[in-house]
Image 1 (cartoon, rainbow, N blue to C red):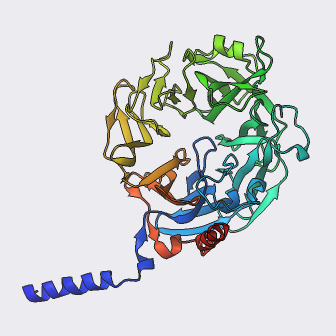
Image 2 (image 1 turned 90 degrees about the vertical axis):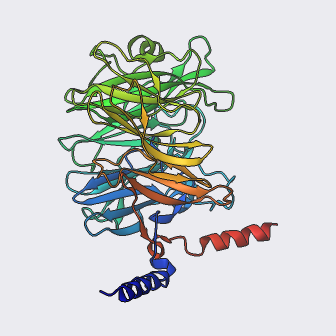
Length: 471
């Protein structure tokens, strides 16, 4: 082709690209109707990859659960579709970034062995109008833990509610075992309540009554302060379920505090419902504070703050764990067979770290974290090849100066490399509570045409009008 014709062809192609409708150009988010804190590592999993598609659940308008699907072969999206009603969010549409959104009822998602999609959502302890569960102690809760299931396998368009789980749930967490059994773990009430689980052996159609795992009780030395917990449960190797948790002294008379201390670990053998600590010693259940200190303690923070992280196991079943400590830094632990390796700070220098991990082998671990520094907000990998003793930062998968990438989900169940985690993004100074939702993989965000990703309609315009009337 002559040089002049080649230049002409390039100019024509460039002109066509520049004149494409703006709505057809891809954006890094798959929807703009995430609401409040739409996802978290605590309520998990919030996505699953199966049969070539990644299914995702997040909190949308009025705190209701929404579901989308990304089909990897065709690189196409379906949804979002509203999957149920969260009773906590029906009275407001937050007009300001300071308006309160409860956020505790965001959805956890699992796909059963028959392909039906299950969500648990909507609870922050359960309101008094629902009655009182045996473990619903302390301040009155809100909402109602709700279970919905898709009407057809792998179909996100139609949903039905199943009245088969406790309404007093907070921090819903689903686990599916290799035999198809489904476990739903949650805090059974408001702050001063036991952590429990319900088990289903028929693909989530019925669940057994709740069984306590971590016990809440008054402190012997101060009956006005309750021993309470924050916990993270996940499937381990084979028939096991891991539990990593922190202690929360909760005062019954004062305002709810953020005090969370120490780090703990244990695991369940689902074959006989027994629990053991890391050395393999059988535990008496449910766990009390004094018993936990003696039998399941990983690290005593001596009054310093520690918050939950995530836990994964290696090919030998040994746990690898991180917690977020009082300086905001992620600290990594692993079980060496006879003791816990001392915690190692992965990323010094900022206080906004969270994410999840991939354990490739006992010595090779990757943490996928969101974090902030003076250059802006970032999401990316930190890798260790020496069992977590040292960490190397990989190039960021997402970076922005004026955008907050927060919060972030746990890693999608059975994740495709191109679709690891879900997170929300919002511009600094944004006055409303709506967020762009991003599906992020090892190659960066999974894009979508802007017109398809625009699902808010005129909601923001109406909010601005309402705000103007208020002034």
